[in-house]
Length: 244
Image 1: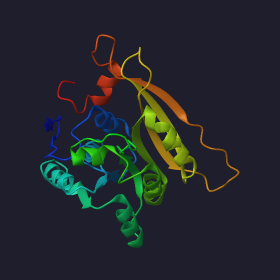
Image 2: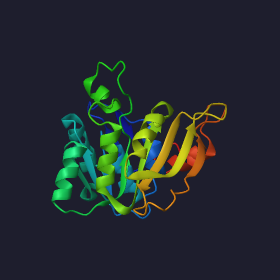
Image 3: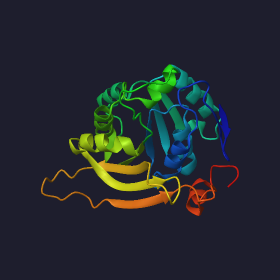
Image 4: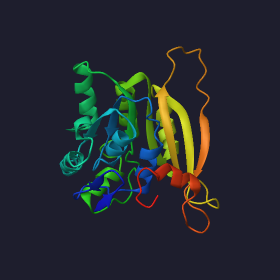
């Protein structure tokens, strides 16, 4: 499925996950103003990478396990205005992390990821869609370990997860080298409880006596009661959606 944004066009070329509202919100929300070296974990067709290059002057490295998605990334990147700043690596993030650290390359000052979040349960008959949505190939523990290894000391990582996955993620986070820095709860409308959560992570202090960061928590509403986008949603997507 193809989707045209204001400054680029993207086609999923048959990979597991088409363009989604969650990914667009994450790509527009992630704090990238100071980033110069960005990593996109599980890039899919490359949407987050393309949004990151539009919003910053950073070089973006995209890591993707599925060869169909790697092909989609390559084609979408080549057709974009920022092809010179985009690189896609065909690899699991675990293998990428090992090779990156062995090579003594620079760590990333921002990492962005729309991770798999379903654990067990019925999976889509579409193998690629199932792989993109379920944690079989990348569970939260492995994801947090990779982010902790690849993130620069003062860097941040931005992710999005549904409410039903947050408890498990928080349990894994407590045992990791990372902690929440900022959280934004997302509701479909003012009458609905939050169903998605945007958040940034940072490294925990090396000083065990230092108290955890004071997490900044905000709320974001996608639609008005009449089904139209809220002003905050319009402001968020104005650089991307053709209608806004």
